[in-house]
Image 1: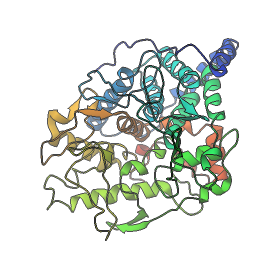
Image 2: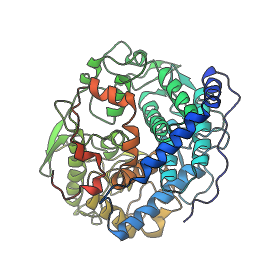
Image 3: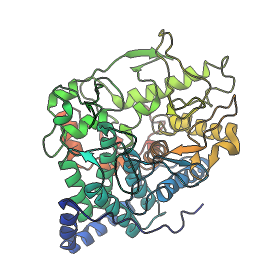
Length: 467
């Protein structure tokens, strides 16, 4: 399947703020630098990673999966703003969904993957990234730099009484930093730096030591805080590494690494839906790094494999589940949107499973357990058949026992599968993102150790080499 021709990237609305105009002026004065960066990046990218090759049949299948995912981020984008829609029909039909700022963050990285794989030209990538960043800088609703979770994709105005979201802003920023480091383009760098610098990190602490989930103009801060293990790793590290008004070092210790459970012979910090163990890892390379207490990479490996074993043990309830057919994370369901996950042992009522399976659960864990997750994805495709596989890849979720299948795909689920497939295969997203000085500063302030140099190669190059 070819990506084919795509519309020109958006140029955004008429600028109301200074960042976009200022960055364009600086870009116009940096032609020579831009040429030098392009030449340097070509030299870097000519050097492949030895041994990073899956089984040829799996490689071909992953190519198809990734191409379909990229197509979502090419087609489900507003042409005037560059904002990515939250969800769309799996057959590629017209989406009326608003934009999710987190999906836009995944989109910025998705376009970089497409360009690296030869599915999009550098010129097209630049047009798309510049146009989206211009609108984010000048047109997207925000509060003290924190973007609203959901906005109208055509004009960037807040919808659904959504919050100015700390975690979704972090996901956007991770995609923006990746695009900055991948492209090394003066205007892109200027725009990303401006977006990053205006975030008021200390305001979002709301007088405490941990970050609030968000803020609404009607009633102020949401009472919930990021105070226990979840998808929060990237949020805090970006705050610690921020160029202005960075979070205090104490904020890294302000959230609980709990509950620690033992399940299927594995001990790990529990958080049921697998996306909580995946999203930060889509950009941050935690392999071989510890903050003095925990190995978050191994924690995600253990959470993934424990879910696989737990799912297989439920075959009396759900006969279609097995060690090959599994996957629990937040998703659509016949009863609405649910945060499916592996339950905590011995906690009554913690298991809400109804037999629904979510392909982005193994999809987002591909680097953690390559053989197991590729096998699961291919088995899910075989079990679900045509009703679960469409223009953008897998539907968001389906229930093999009842025949129900979501008609949609969700941008963040498509995105995490795409990025983690690329990290498994080449380490591309990790390699670019980890060059960002803010990332290194955040990791250092959080007390992370430097990894062994051998971990700089993609996962597939080291599979089977031992722990």
